[in-house]
Image (cartoon, rainbow, N blue to C red; front, top):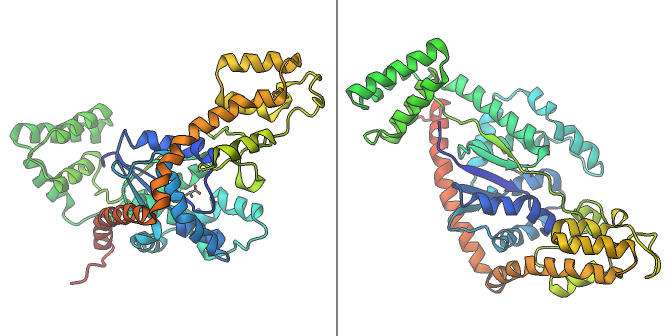
Length: 400
Ligand code: TRP
Ligand code: SF4
């Protein structure tokens, strides 16, 4: 049992747009108010597919962090850092690789899918095969309990759970664990210690889950117990193993329904995006250029919103009253397409203007974002080091 902690990463491969905001960042901003969060730039992950064009990554890293801050990620609440500045991720990746069966990696769906999809790139590489294991190291090194990801990333989190389980099974058999746990339990005090041991026994013998919950309650309320004793007893309660790595849960982020300027999903590869720091003029221009119902050639032709990408944006951005006005006006040729687009322009400008405001100081003084990231990296390194000390220890690497 580890306390709740959220971790998520994003690859720096270009400008962020409304799709990222609605699909990911809005969720991050919400989560940072609910529990401790770590958000990081997955630059090494980007290199697995962009090893021939690292300049793309270099150019996106800082802008991406500025976009996060603009969207409302708050460095006072969340730890923001860059993967490659916490080299322990690579160390854990290497150590986990020793015992990770090749088949587990080959079976991850993104491995073959991405090779098919990105045909122009040679992804038959060692690094790309290891992509999900590097991701597992990202997650496990912070003992993250929750990982907000999109659907395609669920298998990666599942594999991470298997990796953690296997690691704990292999290395969690600390000599003398049982004796140490009993010593720790004594610190709970006579009555609670006895109750705790009974609850454990009850769970071991009957599988009674409510016994575990009660046991956890005792531990949570035990002020006299240090963190190491607590961790040990949480593991002891559930079994005999020491839990070195914790199994994370995937937190499925609903797929962004953010439509692009052409009615397809908003995506850099379709060139149909509105970026998060787009100026009001550009926003207006882009929306005004959007194609509409192809049947509506003249102003006097009635149209059908179901056949029009502009309508999809109304579904995201405007209220019921406006939507009714569009339905009526479009089908009766009562409104023109430019008129129809106005409320969307207004909504997007309103949504993005606080972001442009928040981004301004960072654009004017590039050292600000560097400082935030430096602090985040420092915090992350300290957390990662805690885990690594234990991992190195159980893998027999703490030579004296
Ligand atoms: N693979 C993720 C993506 O493509 C990015 C990522 C890397 C990540 N490491 C992670 C996400 C750890 C969550 C947790 O979106
Ligand atoms: Fe599309 Fe609006 Fe024009 Fe109808 S009026 S075709 S919904 S832009």
